[in-house]
Amino acid sequence: MASDRVVIVGAGQGGVEAAISLRQKHFDGEIVVVGDEPDLPYQRPPLSKDFIKGGGQLRGVQLRDGSFFAERKIELLLGRSVTAIDRASKSVRFENGEVMSYGHLVLATGSRNRKLRAPGLDNPAVLELRTLQHAIRLMERLPSLGKVVVIGGGFIGLEVASLLRAQNVEVDVIEAAGRLMGRVVSHATSDYFRAFHLQHGVRLHFGVTVESVEYDSEGCTVLLSDGRPLRADAVLLAAGVVPNVELAAEAGLHVENGIVVDERLLTEDAAISALGDCASYPSVQAGCMVRLESVQNAVDHARTIAERLTGDAKRYDSLPWFWSYQGDARLQIAGLAAPGDQEILRGDPESRKFSVFLFRDGRAVATESINDPGIHMLTRRLLSAGVEITPEMACAPDGELKALLKSS
Image 1 (cartoon, rainbow, N blue to C red):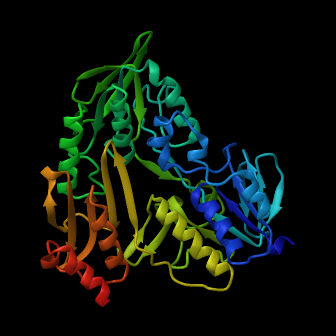
Image 2: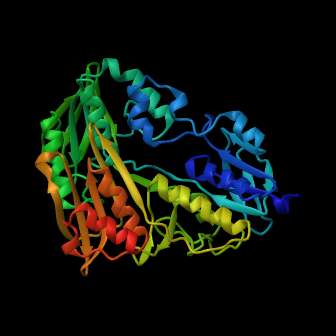
Image 3: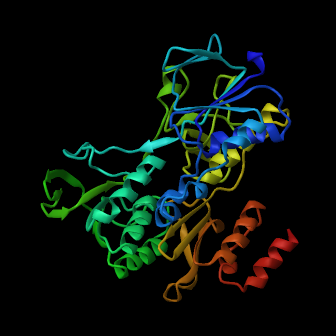
């Protein structure tokens, strides 16, 4: 029956997790997962790391094989697109005109790479790294690349820069802001990675943008806003992402930096939920509406929705955490920091193993750990449990932090 059917639009990690969690919670209705890519659902994080380094082994990125979904009666509609939502009839329309009814609709539409308007950046030769096909294309072009201009000094841009340098490709990173990963990490962490990438031969350009890209038979010339030209074999665009909200907006759902949902991840339509990169939700940690781009966020959103749809409704309050592997530097983040938070360094950056504690009004709100997984896991558990960490505790021996956790 259509009233028992859950349709999930988006076959990324969040959409797939919603389907799996529903079955784990003994939902016995129909589950249909729609994905606009033809490939079996896969993980995105390995694409900028092990997938290309390992020569493109699909087994390392696929979430599950086809038999897994078949055994659990999860229908996959791959290479298909939902083009419209009819909220009155509770149905979706596909690109071929076919219509499917739903009892509940989950929007897991994710995000896409932000496009820049500079002339030449719309050229098909511009590389990206978000989808499996992007990664395959980059892998195929690697042997012919001697120099690449990477636009964007965030997680993906820097992960790609490290990947390219490991292949002895020259790299210039263009960052419009004054520091690396400035939107998501502290000054101390940003400074460490600036030094790290410079030491590994990456050329960093701050406070400039790309004015244009011109192509010729030997490559391209990237003209910067300060007038400097950079020669390269290719340009890779990694200037952030934008949420895929058009489908929701056209259906009349509230959209503001994402599809707006409540604390249970419901839109204003009781038959439609949203999760992951495309959802703007009220964060317990931030005290305001946020939209996060992380695997943890998408997966935990999915589990919360599955619990609600099987009779266990609760507020979403999971602690956000993130990671970025750049060469042999491992960055792990727990919690949500904000500009102006107090930074306290734990350990010595010169040792290549340290953490940064972020405080707001005297209370820890986040930690950033570089090659320091023990502190990351410990503080993640403390923050998740709501244990108060004072600035004085930031540099306390590990045993004292562990004692805090035990006492909680």
